Length: 398
Ligand SMILES: [Fe+2]
Image 1 (cartoon, rainbow, N blue to C red):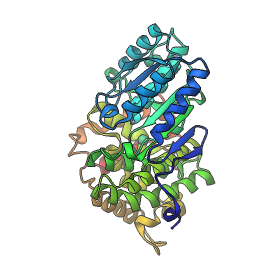
Image 2 (image 1 turned 45 degrees about the horizontal axis):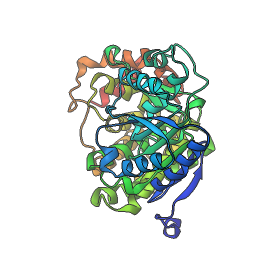
Image 3 (image 1 turned 135 degrees about the vertical axis):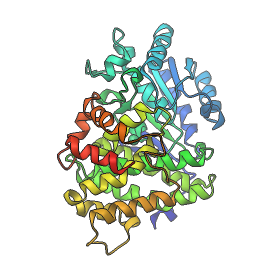
């Protein structure tokens, strides 16, 4: 395989719409990025991150030093949690605004990076709130520059125009997609991902698999989203078991980071549909549910629903999981084989195990249709999204 000819310790520049630095040691590129920010007069930044990972991974040592060397002043907002909330974004905007921040840096997984994108918009629209942004009350056309330092290998947000923030009091977890929030630069450094615990390692890679499954079976799917999907599945199937066995396997982390990045570009092209539209209500209602894990619970039932509409694509991209010679596979078998693979990487729970029951089905179905933006995802599904088939997917995932 071509992977054998790649030196994972050599940092390469990969251009999507964002310029991404990929490879062990890519964090060092932050010196060049800081220099450029400084030269552009972007000498005050607000940094969004979670409580611990930015320090534990070693990212902060480099970031802080590079900012100081280039005379860039910063304020740090380190209270971003998984499933980030609109009030935290508003708090960070206030901090950044009072400081005079001209650019935003997100350090962490999807939550800090998506929050950074949201802050970047709201710095330009200072009379608006994060709730207004996520309830689609306005459509932003400008944002402060965003730098994404990615510490997990799942969301792909470091290279695309999507962001997700929750409005818990309404049980909404909407997604936005605007051209103005493509990060200017992204860093995917697998050496910063070796401390990611086993549960997160699995959940974030399952997120990437769902991104490409949806991006290549939606009504917006294109040959490019399908190409990236095939490669994502091949790499995750090959390297996720290795990373689970040895978290410090830098080659495995490299290919999982690369797979997640190209998956981010795949769904930037092909969009998302059922799995994401149905997972968002789950983690909006139970905020401790991990996004990728919730997607994995739903995936077998979603495959079953859309199998006949996209059979050739599904058999093609999931060939590493399904094996060759499965032309006569049924929808039920396709769902079941996916469930078996998910179990093999440690995803064994069901919705019931996560605290949901039959009594929640109507509410979850309603939220999938009424949460701002999720109707757009449902509209991209390859079959008509009715309340009946959405409910069936939830019911089969219990
Ligand atoms: Fe996702």
